[in-house]
Image (cartoon, rainbow, N blue to C red; front, side, top):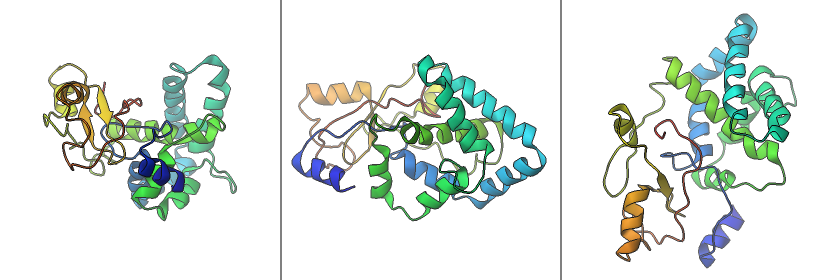
Length: 223
């Protein structure tokens, strides 16, 4: 967090981060969902009485993740998914219960800082995305999370909603996230702002912007 604050103060580029359009922070999103007692109870029920259900979900998510990952990482991805979804043993850093405990006491700025990663520890770097894909799977196939996740965010300039465009068969939205305020704009509007010399401040909150990184992680409302 201190490194993020220092870089922002000096106007320096921030390290790479998981960016999930149109959530402002991946870890803050995970915190809001994983701290749902109903979700944790359901997962525990699956582990004790419907283990095959959870195993099938883990297999689907594993196939999704390794399809876009170098083969040298496949074994690690499989282990991450297994540890995150199928194991609840004490001392398992990657379990949903352990992750929920770590996130429970973090505020929004702490969550933003945790979104940044380095290439040194691929497991810890990739683990939040494994959980994110698990949540997406539940959201699209279960009533459990539909009331917990609101797909309401839109471009700060044109107000176009990616979810609606996808439903109507529109062109997929490419998102850019303003740092450090983390508001989202679509790529078309961002380029237009830059061409008019108006990209130095966020169109929504008017905060100074030091960069507009792409939303590199596929989101629930991004193709």
